[in-house]
Image (cartoon, rainbow over the protein chains, first blue to last red):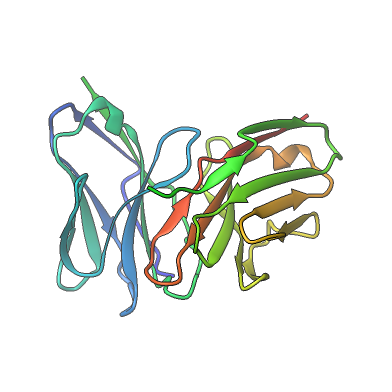
Length: 111
Length: 113
């Protein structure tokens, strides 16, 4: 499982775009990149997943450069309710392998 | 949207007592997991389960822990003799046969006193 590095914390204001970058220098060919969001006392919630280039869904975008050694989660126009911990995870889970969580990035959105 | 459900949401138990945490994974999912999160710490893997047997377990998952899928829908975590340090939020998760997304339940908060 590739090791990931992401900022411990970030601050933002309502309405701003937030970009959280994750480094995963030893990502393997078959690895996917997945981001989860966790609110206090709740389970991690799947946000987005990608393999390369750009993926967009209704809540976020995920940018992955060609070398795949990093990825950036982009949250457009954050609100106070986006205050949470965001986890970047890298691995090949086709056959049911486990997810290993790091410390994540604690995002604080201020009014 | 299908979801993983867990019961109870909160349980307080005395040290040394047995606890069973229950989970109903997403229907048709094949891979099942238990994780835990001690207050203020990161989410930790406990065990994965596939085809009615444990696939992998962490160092945390010692002889005091066991998992079972007693029927086609429930997935349980049993702690035989709870210790104070077992106090944590326990998350059940499941994954389908294809794809890479693991879905988590909302957790069972266990307090051992």
